[in-house]
Length: 142
Image 1 (tube, one colour):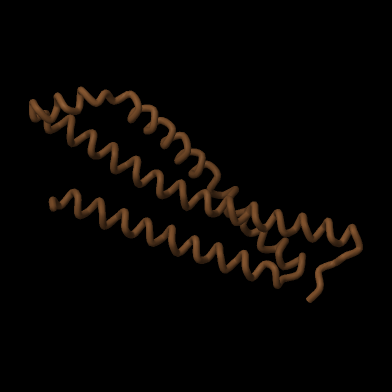
Image 2 (image 1 turned 180 degrees about the vertical axis):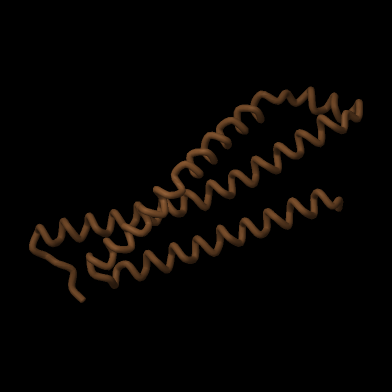
């Protein structure tokens, strides 16, 4: 394989490991949330919301970039690519490959962002359920 492919797959592998680690952390956080009282969960939720707020612009940028990249990808005509291959238009094919690699990386970053949002949403749901139980006179038992 070429160096460019090796570099891309290595970076993608590292990013996917980060996604896997984040998923494991989220799973652990959610499992442990059911063993905590409402104040502890609210504290964890406040931390998650603060983290999301700090990264909101970054996440919005990833979403916008992914949308633009998807639209560009849709606009790319298959016959043009076949033509570039046949006429060996390396610069165009290289640019297309770089755009595809960037699209893949952006997708992985967005997946990480969505996991953070999922954590905040899950903690919010748990807090809301606890509020409902307390209001109904059925507080959580330890």
